[in-house]
Length: 325
Image (cartoon, rainbow, N blue to C red; front, side):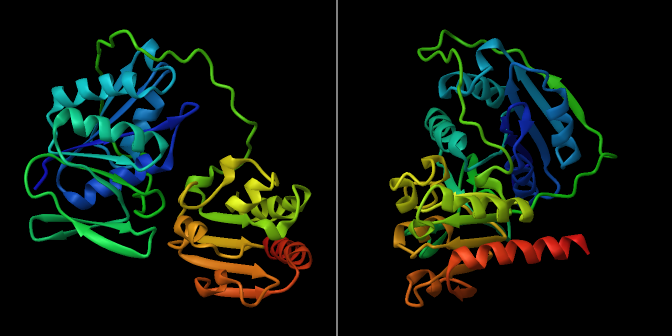
């Protein structure tokens, strides 16, 4: 059984992503009595991030501050995390299956010469053996995997393992570790992001997604209004992105983002297999489409056949009334 579990935290604009806390819960599932050691890297003040990890269950947190960690690069963060791994010699390493996690963890696993279980959606114990469940064949099936010997290394899909309750009464130690980072072959001078407000799509509990049936960029506006009322995020099918109705950063599917929200509202989406691969594991799926034969209804828990431009505004208005009561 793993005794020391290293959780690699991930932040955006100085704020830890929710999957960092979910990774702590995953570590607790692996060994409820193990020592959870969090690690956060960057070039800003990392004290608040370290405290958040402790509030969510970490026993100890290591911060790595370096000017070459101001922006994520696999080379820079790889060197920093490798130094922490070497110093801590953990029995297990857990990180979120995010864009950063998918880039960083295979490189670390290769350097450590260990196996990596990626995109786990559930963790169970079978005696002393840790069993990971992960989707295969675009989510059509699941497989169970174990690591029989050596370091346990895994990434977890966001929104599948519930984070522990935040507890500000928890205490733990925060240690800063100095690391040497050699000259980087890739240097990021600046990052220019598209303006984006609201909830991050990959971690949203509610997703309102539009397809070709939305018909235009203006047609997405009612979806944004509904998402705002529900406290969720807006996504899209590849068809909508290809038609320039929205940016590709919103694409959900086999070649886009994989989301597993509590509620997924598919608006004007036919249900191509590539799209289903990115959202079919959502907890509750609501489909709104004027075509009663649309494939999306085959995976939906609830279906509404009708004109989305009539249904979405009415739905938004009713939810506003409920929230006002």
